[in-house]
Length: 391
Image (cartoon, helix red, strand yellow):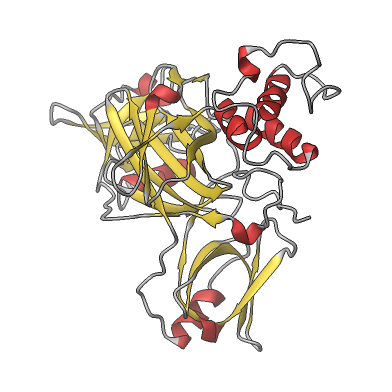
């Protein structure tokens, strides 16, 4: 029996699928430009910024006399500043002020958010899936995904940098396929019904109630199923003959990893899964309509870069990398590989990567088989409370 490695915390954990059968998705990235200056779109309550008089609409020009190269670089200056810092601020009325700010020792040090609208940032998750982050006002939406067993599993992170709590539910999101046809956003129950039928729905209901699994594989005879255990399409799913152990593990996963429903406080990050049925065409476009703003991320099959690097350029690139750096390779035949850099063997002219999941923990490619390479932003593991988008 084939067994699926726990891949990317994005797929199911089992049920007769081998890793090569999983279709990894890749961001579709068009034009992107980082705003040149940090215009404040959110100020957290009782933050150092609010206490110093920084307000929404202000432009943060410099930190201790240092001018950030663009809006995204301001956080680096704030992170490196001493606790007592001076900010040059261009106020909404056009006047310039120099404000003394006593920063927090830990993040968020300042408690503001720069408007990064227009910037589309490629990245890679801890599980080795390519991601894309889009920005609009006080929000940042990061998405990555795979397709497995007829289901699109999207890992989504939504940073709430408003000054108020954010209710996250299915009403915030919509999706379309490559032809613009709407795709239904599935509930965890609908996913389990599609895959396992009412056995899956029963398992999910148990996991949500934090019950043990003495009766997990079949409902108790003579006891009527609850609404949570009935599937509209009937009692059978696509994987009716799958190993009950895998079905149980997948129920546990969907019960704990789904994005909603939940309330996220200011400065926090929603992190979880959204589910769609596999579309007839790609890319999949996921849209979030949040507090009057719209954020959209597109994911399709991986496309190789058109860039062609010389042998010497590749060598210098890999010699400059540090262990753990996230890289994207385009191979000679146009295939794409994403992984975390481990080491470069100068004698063998071979690059080694650490790879999550699978039978082997490492992968390597010779320089002669690589067409181009580029660094990617690493998406941290599932966040605790404070968003990395806050300064």
